[in-house]
Each structure stands twice: as structure tokens, then as C-alpha cells.
Image 1 (cartoon, rainbow, N blue to C red):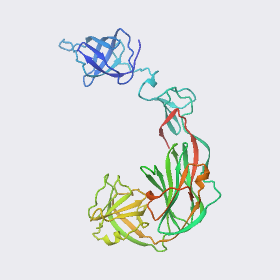
Image 2 (image 1 turned 90 degrees about the vertical axis):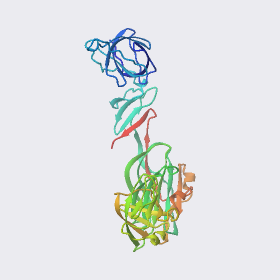
Image 3 (image 1 turned 45 degrees about the vertical axis):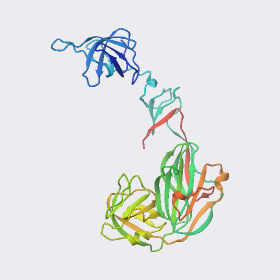
Image 4 (image 1 turned 135 degrees about the vertical axis):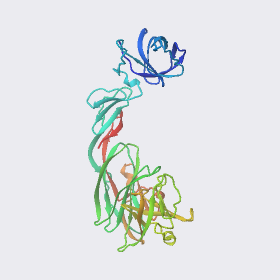
Length: 419
């Protein structure tokens, strides 16, 4: 006898005859003869029926007899049915499903480790470290996993950088890249000036959601190019990202103020109560400090004296002040920060506020390099301004990406990555 996949359908009709509607999942291929099947109808119990199936017409010939001798007939009208063919001997449900038409089904099929061969749509394989699904209607014959191409290389290959010096509390510099094909980012390099404090950020979708990650924060002890490694990360083709640096020149003896607040990270923005600092999930670029700290000290005058370029530290995170709002709430100050990253843990936290004095800051550039490089990138540079207010230009600034091309077959799509 033949077997079939389990399917769900909607029925309409009387207790003796019902008609199958359009299948919700899969395809049914019964023989046009009396066939023992098992029927599940919504919350109704399992019913063993003998039916005649012709096309989509199903006639219930007999049903299981109750203990009192009555027939246990059911009204299947409007019920979601699951019909499964069973063995004739003992009415035991059979779970040996034929899956030769997996590409007709809206589900995946595990095929184990990828091997050279032919795969059909919805087949899933492991090609370490990638789990991939075949998405090509005509089938998949190419390698499933992503394959590195060539050696890692830095994007910038110009003749050299020129120094510039500006009196400032802080300077943003970096580059915005648009990927033309999928690839790995394996590291970066910075052109440093000894004594400068550098905070490095990787920003995905800078023109939209601005998903920022702080990669590094340190004070330079040498000059010139310095290499930094990171865990390799895949960037798909067509992605826009920034590698941007915030540099300041710390004072030999910084002026620091230490304030204690109950640090909270609610989902939605809210004005903080006494002793509380609010840093909401939906407004990562703003921290709201009540003027009264957890020690009951009134910090109104001090907090309102902060300016763009000053520094706030908490645990391992260093934020640079990018804006001050003293008008939205009479009981708190709203400080715009960079990066828009939360710290941890929650609860009582000591915040270190450092007042920065404008001084000479050196940065490095290659004027209009991106115009003639043939590469899809722009420069970013801003003095005492918020990162979001920077207008891109064609100059390359002293931060560079270590990239490696990757081949990804259009026949496959990524399900997951291990490691």
C-alpha cells in the first residue's frame, strides 16, 4: 500500500460526508478506493474511520462503535482535519513519510553535512561553520558555505597621510563604507598621535538605526599606524557601515567629579525620580540624570555646566557628551552621548564626570582620496559636533579596515553560524 505525508485541511459537509478544502500544508495522494485512515479533528479525540475518497470528496462509511453499541459519528464541518494513512493490520498509525517532494512544502529538510551533489529547494546542510538552506527553485549544486577569497588586505593603499592640527575638545574622524560584495572584517588600523585618547566605534546602518558598537578605548603611546585585531565579522553586500573614531587630548591632571546614581534601563524613555539615572532601550543616545543624586546632593549647577566634548565614565564604558538639554524636564538634565551604548550592571553606579579643556588635537588625512580610488567610501570629520551632524566628504581619514572577500552562492541562504 502507499503512504502519504500528514496534512491539515479544512472540511465542510454533514456527519457522513465532507469535502476537503485547499490543503494548508502539503499534498494528499490517496488511492480512489476504500482506505483505512486516522482522522484528527481539532480538539476531538482520535477517530478510526473507513472512508471512500474520490478526488476531494470523502464519505465516512463506518466509524468506531461505542461501548453502548451506538456509532460514534462526528460532524467535521468547519473543523481543521489532519488525515493520515494507516496500516490495515491493527490500524496502527504509520509515520514513514515519503519526502520526495520537499520542494513543494513550506518547510525545511535536514540533509546533514554538505557533500558534493545535487540538493533541492528547502534542503538544509551544515558546511562548517555555516548552516545553509537551498533556496534555488532549480536546485543547488554549488558549495553551500561561504568561502574566503584571497588574503585579508587593508582598504587604503594611498601614498600617505597629511597631518592637521585643530584646537578642540573632541574630534570625530573616520570613513563610511558601502560593501560591493560579501566579506569579512578581520581588524582595523589607526594613525595615532601619542597622548591622544581614542574611542573607536563600528556603526552598522549609520543612515538609519545607527547600531553602534564600541571596539576600543585607550590613550595612545606611539605615533603612526597601529594595527588592531577583532573577531571576524561577516558583512553582506550592499551594507553601509562606519568605522569612526572620537579623539580628545586628556589633561595631565583631569578635573573629575564622582556622582552616585541608581542606573536604570527601562524599555521606554521616562523622567528619572530622585537619585535615578534613566538610560532607556529605545533612546540609547540619551541619559537622563535627576539633579538630585543617590546621596541626596543637588548637582544642578554642575550638570548644567557640562559642554560638548566632556566625558562621562561608568564601569567599562566611556561616553563623550554630544549635547545638553536643560528645558525638557525641570527636575533632570538630558545628556546626549556617544556611543549610544548602555553599561552594566543595573543599580547603584558611580559616574565619573571629566571636564575636558580645548587643546591642540592632531589628526591625519589623504585629501580627496576616495574620489579617485575607485572604492565605495566617504570620509567623516567633525570638530566639537555630534556624530550624527557630520557631513561626509571625499577625503580619507586615518582609520582603515582590514577586509577579506567572501564568495557566497546565490543558490543558498544563511540559516546560522557556529563559532
